[in-house]
Amino acid sequence: MALWADRITIKKTIGTSPFELVYGSKARMPINNLLLVYKFIHENNLEMLDPLEEKMEMLAELDESREDSHRKNLKLQQKSKYLFEKKASERKFKINDLVLFWNARAQDKGKHDKFDALWLGPFVVAEKNGEDSYFLTDMNSEMQELPVHGQFLKHFFA
Image (cartoon, rainbow, N blue to C red; front, side, top):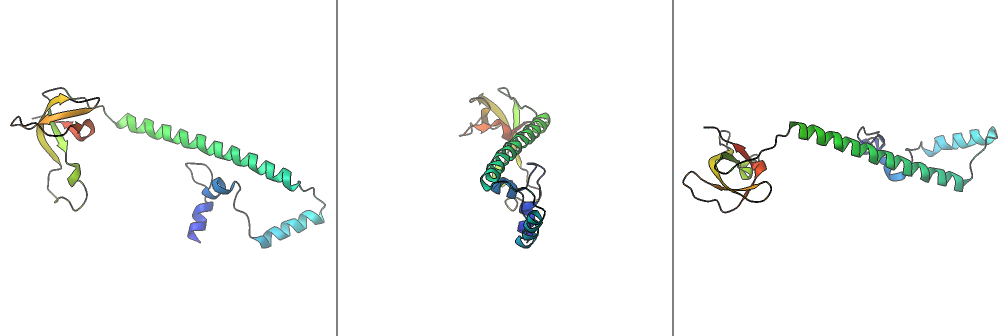
């Protein structure tokens, strides 16, 4: 029951429910209620659409709702990207800069103790390798084997 409720709930990010995106229409009432609606239509001689016309209209609405959801999703992605880039600072390092290196292997819970340092170093930037990749040397001038991406580095101020 909870899964059904989640699937028919309208999501803020896409503006529709997942059910509506998959099936092209809103979740309908149980069949007992639908029979009452059809009975009302027939009793009052209301005009019903031809089944083919109804299906064509439904498909057109489905395409519109998918395109609308796609536009909303792209807009949300652009907003998220803007907010991320607004906070993110560009880290450019020069040769001979002192940097600290993020120990990504130990960052997961249980792989380090409470007071273990997750930033290793200081290291010296030996050379630039590509757009945002650097070779490092330790303070004894021993070169590290592999280059390090700039996102794992930060400036060290002694």
